[in-house]
Amino acid sequence: MPVMFINDQPVDTGEHRTVLQVALANGFYVPHFCWHPELSIVGNCRVCVVEQEGRGVGIACNMPVAEGLRIQTESEPVRAQRKAMLQFILLNHPVDCGICDKAGECTLQDYHYAYNGAPALSHEPKLHSTKFFPLSERIILDNERCILCSRCVRFTREISKSNVLGMEQRGDGMRVRPVEDRTLDDDPYSDNVIDLCPVGALLSRSFQYQARVWYLEPTASVCPGCARGCTVQLWHRRHEWRLKGLDGSHNERILRVTPLENPRVNGAWICNKGRDLGALFGRPRAGQALLKGRPVLLAEAIDAARRLVRGAGRRVALVSSWGSNEELRAFRNALADRFTSFVKADHRPGEGEVVEDDLLIRADKNPNTHAAQALFGNAPADIPDDTELVLVWGEGADFSTLPRGAKIVHLGAWLQPENGYADVFIPISIQTERHGHYTSFEGVVSAFEPCQRRPEGVIDAETLFPLLAAPPGSDT
Amino acid sequence: MKHLIPEFEHLKKRLPPGHDATLLVPCLRRVQEDRGFIADSDIDGLVEYLGVPRIQIEEVLSFYGMLRRAPIGRWHLQVCHNVSCSMRGAERLLDDLTGRLGIQPGETTPDRRFTLSTVECLGSCGTAPVLMVNEAYHENLSAADLDALLERLD
Image (cartoon, each protein chain N blue to C red):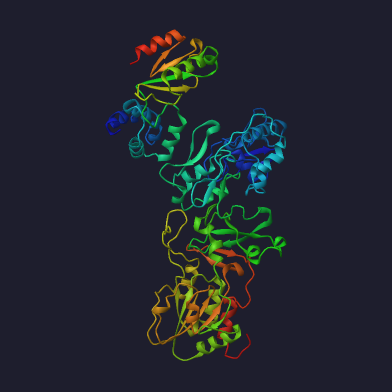
């Protein structure tokens, strides 16, 4: 294994091929704008300069490792060059951090405080450019803030392969622009450029002016949008910043979704559908147990369901492919012997949605079909006409196709007309209100954590199934 | 553009396989020489022929000032406005031209005879001021020389 020296400490270069990779892997932070581990090397930002002893300064992102190489990452010439580079990068930057959504997680801000910190040397007036340029329905571009690192352009060329973005003109008139005949709406992965942007140039319309990022914190979760099971971070207000003065929904709301890097599943990316989980989880919730549409206490509804579950005759269960591994196991342990169980697709591809592609998106729009089918088989639902009870767990069941004479017990989380049609409706919790795991189509198990409070009157399916198995009249 | 493909095929033989995109600038120059400008159909043709994404062609077109997206007049008058030429009278030359032709840099006369442009250094500082008419240099240009030159351009 080749050994090199960074700041006089011997480090093992391992599999890495450039000095920047070795430095970052060994805990020596080297600032960088244009370099990204998943994208090609362009070396145009020039802030990752390091000093090779005896050879002067050079950019680390494109410096090959060699046996015995001696590198200084914070020497005087290095800091001086980074400072000069930052003066240059900030030449036409508006420094409008006060109204910039990126403030607080902007690397330009961080590096400025670490290496420059000085007012501009230039007395020339700053050049103005387009602000709020619409790249798509989802993304706006502020060309004044853009530092032309080209990460977004390389993403559309190398990762999403939509080839929508490019750099037009040259010099200080250079701008990121979409190709003439298309927009970024064509790219189902476009929102990744917002995370890739090291400054506040590419902004999400849905997140714009919604929150300062230092009031937010992420919760690790799994995207339920398809069978890939991408790991994501759900951003919501920090608990210490949940203020009484704000209305409850603002305190609890999921404000944005970002990828949680995971080389086994999604790498550093997620698709645009995953960005809209806030809207998916923000749909109106069902919080009231119902008997044929009549509001009742939860305990009463559970007791009614118990009586149906223990009744004679044929019973069929439509198991949710959105149930977590824990919930599916709880159902099998408590109730599987009382039902003929079929796995139901809770969600199907929506209109205009990308059904499947080579990067991440899978045709099965449910997160846990793999685990559900492992327990309950993959036979299509076949419900005989003499069925006396159908237990419908989750969304996606067409009640009009269920046998006329069958009683229906519906476990659902959302406010839907079907809830009142069912003989017993029991409101259950959603993914953001409980812990759990999903198994992806490749068999990778990923965990999600709760970030929202479970509403009053709503029960976790995992707790509910053993209660349903108990005799009527037992405690709930 | 299609009729130029045999010529492009000839250029392609000089490159290792898989480097077709390298031909983009030579192809664009040849198309412009042929048509006078780059039309939308030429871009579509090159996207298909070279297999490069359209955005990369648009980048190149906007980067190089010499590549045009619209037709120009018969005579393209290009005045260098960099330091050496400016010091030796290029600004007077430009004023003279805008006055006589009645157009500003970047515009074409209504009879489509002249198009006036300002350009960056033409690499002929020793013989400033320089006016480039289509592909020809006219150096050390005085007001009288300009009069005589414009007479010759019909």
